[in-house]
Structure formats: C-alpha cells, structure tokens
Amino acid sequence: MYREVPEPIQKPHEGPGEMGKPVVIPKEEQEKMKEMFKINQFNLMASELIALNRSLPDVRLEGCKTKVYLDNLPTTSVVIVFHNEAWSTLLRTVHSVINRSPRHMLEEIVLVDDASERDFLKRPLENYVKKLKVPVHVIRMEQRSGLIRARLKGAAASKGQVITFLDAHCECTVGWLEPLLARIKADRRTVVCPIIDVISDDTFEYMAGSDMTYGGFNWKLNFRWYPVPQREMDRRKGDRTLPVRTPTMAGGLFSIDRDYFQEIGTYDAGMDIWGGENLEISFRIWQCGGTLEIVTCSHVGHVFRKATPYTFPGGTGQIINKNNRRLAEVWMDEFKNFFYIISPGVTKVDYGDISSRLGLRRKLQCKPFSWYLENVYPDSQIPRHYFSLGEIRNVETNQCLDNMARKENEKVGIFNCHGMGGNQVFSYTANKEIRTDDLCLDVSKLNGPVTMLKCHHLKGNQLWEYDPVKLTLLHVNSNQCLDKATEEDSQVPSIRDCNGSRSQQWLLRNVTLPEIF
Ligand code: UD2
Ligand code: MN
Image (cartoon, rainbow, N blue to C red; front, top):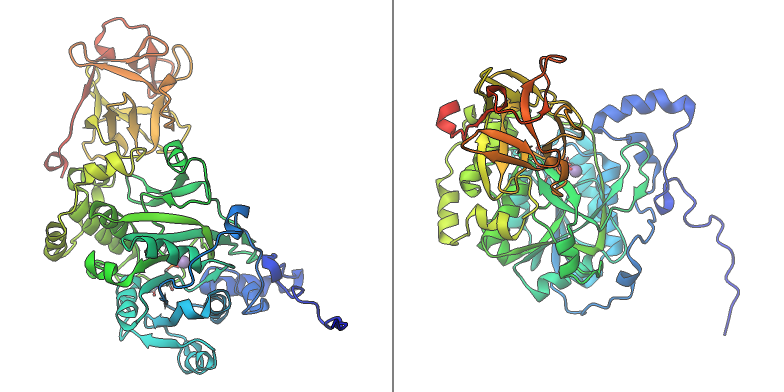
C-alpha cells in the first residue's frame, strides 16, 4: 500500500555547507571571522555554522559506484590524533566516519589527545562521544609528543584488524572504507590511502581531489603531488578505478593491516612533533617488500592549511630537519647527498640514535634506495643515474653557475664559487639534463640566456652534452656552447658558437660531502 509521505518541514540539505557547499560569511561578521581564523588557521566561524553530520556529494568515478565488495572484510579501528583541534572539525570527522562506514567493519574510533590546552577537549569531549552509537575512546598523552608518538599510542590501544589513521579535520564520503579494506584483505602487505579531497580552509567547500596525481618528493624532502605517469596508467590498462601505485603517501590518511604495521616497524618513535614520518614509512613500505597505493574509489576530505596553528617546541626548522635526517640516514643511502647538498644547514642538526632503525632495515632485509628509484619512482626528482652532483665552474673566470632565485623561469647567474652547496648545486644526469631539484637548465633561442625551467624530460632545449676532454657543455638543439656571462649582462651566462675559448670550458665537480661540510 502506498501512503502519501508529507513534505518535511525543513528540506534536508538546506543548511549551511550541506552537500559540501561553500559557506559565505556576511560582511558585518568578517572582522570577527578573521580573528577566529587565527585560532586554527582555518575559517572556524564557517566550520561552526556547518552541521556536524553535514551531507556531502558522491564524488566517485562512475565505475566506482557499482563495484561490489565482500561482506567479510576485516574490521578497522580509526585512530585520530589531535593537538588543540577545533570542536566542530574534530567531531565532524568522527560523525562522518560513523555515518559512512558499515557498522560491522568499524571496530571503534580512538581519539588521541596530544596534550591539548583547551578545556572543551577534556571532559566535554568524553561526555559527548559516550552518547555515540560506535565506541569512541579518548586517550591522552601525558605531555606534548607530536603526531608520530601519539599515533603509536593510539595504534597500541586499538583492537581492529586494520588500523586507519585520519587527521582531526577530515570528512569521509560515501563508500570510502570498503575499497580500502578490500585491498588489504586481498594482500595484507598493501598499505592504502584514499584520494584526499580538499575542504577549503576559507569556505569549507568540499572539492573532489584528482585521481591523476600521486605522491612524490623533491630534493628538500618535501612531500609533493605530481601527475600520475603514463607507465602507471598503462599498468592499469587505463582503468582509473583501479588503485594507483604511489611512491609516497601524504601521511595523514591511510589504512594498514595491524600485524603488518608491527612487522614493518610501525613508526620511528625518535621523530618529534610533525614531519618526515610520511616519507619514512613510504620508503620503508616499498624497500621492505610492501606496496603503497592510492585507492581511487575511496574519497576522504581534509582541510589543507596554509600555515600551522600550533607551536613546535624546539623550533619548526630544527624538528623537521631532525626528522628528515633520520629518514635520510636510515633509508636513502648515498642519495641522501642530494638532500644535504641543497640544504647544507641540516647536517648541523643532531638526529639522535638511529641504530635500532638501521637494525630494523637489516632484519627485514630491505632493498637499497637505488632499487626504489629504479623500480618505484623512476620519474623522481632525484636521478637514479648521474655523472656529477656539485658545482659547475667556469675555467676562465673561476666562477660558478648559480641558481640565484631557485625559481622557475629565472635566469641562471654566475658568481664567485662559495662551496656551500645550495644555489650552486647542479646534477648532470645520465639523461644529459643539468638540473637542480625539479628545474633544468634550458635555453630557448640562439645566443640566448640560460634559464631554469621545469624539467620536461623531452630532451629538446634541456639536452646538454658534456665533453670531459674539451670541457665544453654543448647545447645540442642549437649546436652552441655554454659560455660565461656575456658583456651585455655580466651575470647571465648564455650560449654562443663553440670557439674553443676558456670561457666555454666548465669543470663539473662531483662534490662529496666531507668537502663541503
Ligand atoms: C600532513 C599530513 C599529516 C602528517 C604531516 C607530516 C595529510 C592530509 N596530513 O600535514 O597527517 O603526516 O603531513 O607530519 O596527509 N598533531 C598532533 N600533535 C602535534 C602536531 C599535530 O597530534 O604535535 C595532529 C594534528 O592535530 C592533526 C595531525 O596531527 O590531526 C596532523 O597534523 P596537521 O594537520 O597539522 O598536518 P598536515 O595536514 O599539515
Ligand atoms: Mn591535517
């Protein structure tokens, strides 16, 4: 029998931010909004206007919506660590997990408070989560420990067969969990990340992330998104609903089999506060026999911020450098020199004792970093094969090429050699590029100046042939030679017809670290 369903008084999806719509703050409130922004480095006023269980669009590829998953997938605990998180973002994360996860796959949610200083995150939080229909445990660090050790504590306190980590300002969308758990069930040594969608820090608008980007890193060991290369599209025969093998993970959102997390050595507990742990676990997974994937049918949103809202006890730079040194020393073999030579300051940072991590690498018989570059990340900014890494010195003037601005489209300079790495470091690679990080020496016209452009790996204007006897650097496309700074502009090298003069001779020094430090 049919019955007329009365119109609901308030239509669903009409409140602020429903269906992931942006929230616009009226003019008269904007002063207050700006003040509140500073607390968490996102638009807290907007966040507070949005329901804790707001609706979101289904942003999945069509081919994902019809996939069917086994019902007996492993259970997961969701571990969320936080330090001084806002109530609305933290609880919206929790509600989105509860509302959009099949109940029998969700063991529990574990909230780890990393010594927050806000009263509402103490008793009021505990009282609130008690009423939820999924067990939510709140555990606390005794002192500020950073996200790495907080996650370790959360993992140790959890019981699910899989551990899923989320940041404290996320929103899970429909169907996010099943494809992650299904991959782990198929192979317990596969570590999986969802596509990380963008929740605007300004309006809290929900914007779908791309399935065509994956994780990499640059010479400074910053995590970066890069386009998924053709070889990875080919491996999946063009099916974008299949998981993408990714060289690195962003860090905050991933699922891992509980026992496998133990086996491969959880996290490096010697890392402090924030940073580096994402590359560390990525290298470790690949080098020690696992697989790291972005599961393109799983979408979770995250509020990306432009600045960090909290303190780094001991100094931001110090902490990140220490964490990065630990991962470089343990996992990167001789390729750590690319990091050290471009950021010489980091070698002065004390990185503590890494013997147990080195022991782990031996015990697990992990592969060398060169294997990772060759097989997992051939399009890396760090070249697997190269002839030199160091300065490029002009024989006549005894000055060095200098990537002064370290910016795209900038001209290259030539200055007195300082031997301190940084701007005067270039690598002449087996592909005959001269590069520093992701920028390549490029000349686009006859007699033209040398500029730094994004490496395109298509040879063209970025192909250089070094003659170790004549010491010339031939720009192949123009058949001209790299020359010292020209008279018109005494600081900008350019290409000229090859004439055998000393101003066209260059020494590519393969600097080894003890020489500079
Ligand atoms: C990214 C990752 C983050 C982490 C970080 C590198 C994503 C979306 N986020 O930066 O998870 O891997 O890179 O370390 O991939 N927190 C603490 N204690 C602290 C500092 C932070 O509990 O001392 C919490 C914080 O409240 C948040 C989580 O750790 O829930 C990550 O911190 P974030 O959001 O500042 O990091 P994010 O997203 O900039
Ligand atoms: Mn975050």
